[in-house]
Length: 209
Image 1 (cartoon, one colour):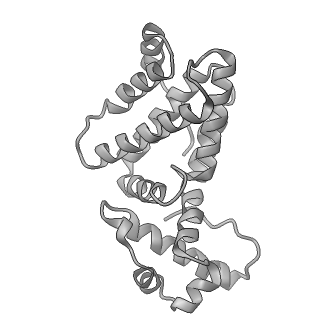
Image 2 (image 1 turned 90 degrees about the vertical axis):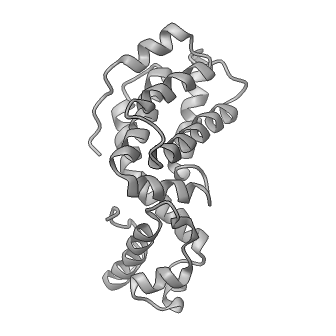
Image 3 (image 1 turned 135 degrees about the horizontal axis):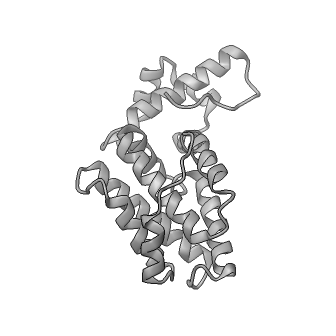
């Protein structure tokens, strides 16, 4: 089940209905072919009419945007909170990359949901998308990364992570793939080989989610 919705403009009953729609959608998209889900399926799974659905979400695209934030918010905040004390952006990026990929390995339903939601909006949701951009920008300014601009670095990192997540969910990778992917992404961001290898071999900081 996904985290409780943070919407505050609904009554308790409305809040429950809205959350039921979000939970039903998560269950429907949490597998490989979940992207093909239709509004009729969502309504049936949530036990609501099409009209009721539109009282809460103007479109399926909007529903997916909200769900992406809710699926990634707590996990992303846990990662960010854990990494706040890490000044080296390369070290922090490695931890974030590996934690996200390992989360998908542990929880395929969450992984497939994030993959499908990323196909209809910013990769891994707006919060993750913007947090990654900020980290890339800091890394370029500090000299940790050697790439043309933060947007290029963000697209490189998130796009590669998403592709790797799909491969992992399809059983085409090994348990060590997060470390391998992170090493080559750090290299692509301009981190020297010896430094990148040293970083990915370090124990990952624990997170609470």
